[in-house]
Image 1 (cartoon, rainbow, N blue to C red):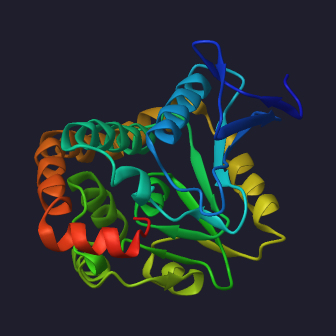
Image 2 (cartoon, helix red, strand yellow):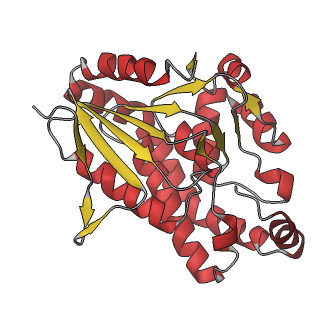
Length: 265
């Protein structure tokens, strides 16, 4: 059995730059580490997807914790970088991004999101695709706030959010762009547990251990039965939603907002 071993999953001979994974007692901990706000770009998604594919094939891993370094889980897309993307390249990235959260949504092993700080927009989309969410109390907020700068969201993120919150609460969240503290997010059902910063790792490992103790084959079957209809709906609608997202993203009003604020989504 692997114990307390840091593993850097390798793609084409290169060590991953932004993602690392430690496997200990049948639990893999995947850590995102990309600057202060853990902004998501194409390289981050490629590394996360490669990492989770490797974990899926590792028979010693029975549960996964997904977290990040610092005070941010992720503040979302790397806006300054994507301002330099032509439409075709941005569509390529968005396809990778939505493919990843759909893969995570259907991942055959339990995934616990340990939200160590702000979990905004693209970061929130990844978090809600996990099986269980623990978030730190304090100033950290979670949101799908795209509407606040004139952007849309994706069909897949809406379907997953509707599963978690129901239609009305999902509408309120995405149509207002409200940013929720952990306690408020727990009350509405967006997260499953609130934790102090000091207890976050221990709480995540406890939940991961409880999941790991379940029969893995049975878990995979039950998760597929519960989520496959939603995943099929996502696949059917996602391409059109990406194209609509891009049309809005490059529209005059939204493009101006992005250039002025250079914020992360």
